[in-house]
Image (cartoon, rainbow, N blue to C red; front, top):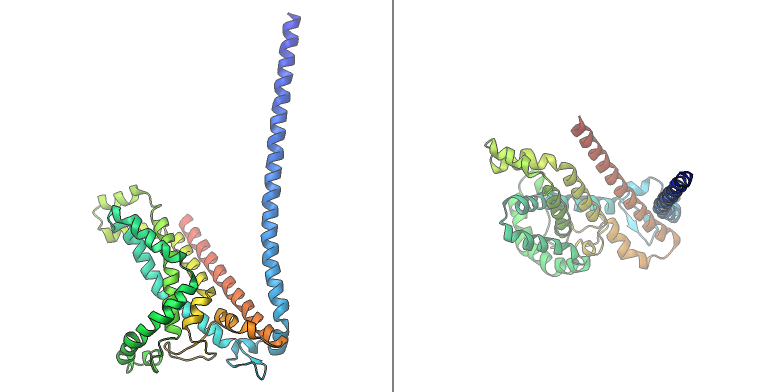
Length: 331
């Protein structure tokens, strides 16, 4: 009896020892995982801080020389070392807005068609074809825009816009001047095509997450296809839609090569969308290799800093919008 008690006690101690070793392994694994993820976050933040610091240090001579006037000055003259960022900022904002005005309705419409209306055998081929647009290099878009889209717009679209809106107040200013082919409107069209697959793919994926029971309940109540889409699908997925739109906007703001080919690269602001212009990315790409002098280089680096700030502001606005939507949804 005593031997049995001793064996039972020994076996229990061994089980407790093995359990303690298992818990110790799990604890070490958890601590190691926590440390690795913390290091990853610190590295990302350090990289972001390093980029911000490098941009600020590089642009400090221009900041000291021009101050706030750099943001509101249109002139860009390397000969006299006078620089202003107003024209590139204007071109960046306007081309991105044009791109989103075209890409968002087209992207959302394509996503709705693929998930709700398209025959099942055609969904995958059409979806793959749209996603392939995102795989095309931006320089290919630039070449296509320069040699095909710009001549097409110059010959057919821009003369028609001038003829139709030439006598309409306000619109006559937006569509005034000779049809150059290249310009802000052309750059907006190219950006819209580049942004389209991002908006479509993300919207299609979030539309597919809508529980079928919700849509079936709508149809059971006698709702039409449009009522189900507008009252159930779109409200249920609005957070994901906004995320896709903001991702596309970020791509449009930072695009370089495609815009450089078709925008005309003119450092001036024109009320007409048909006139040549420039963007922040295009200005940096065109002139950085030719920048002679510390002030010229610093002005280009400050353009990069401004683009970084604009992107940060857009991201912050999107996060605020998403937070408010989530708060209302929770209520």
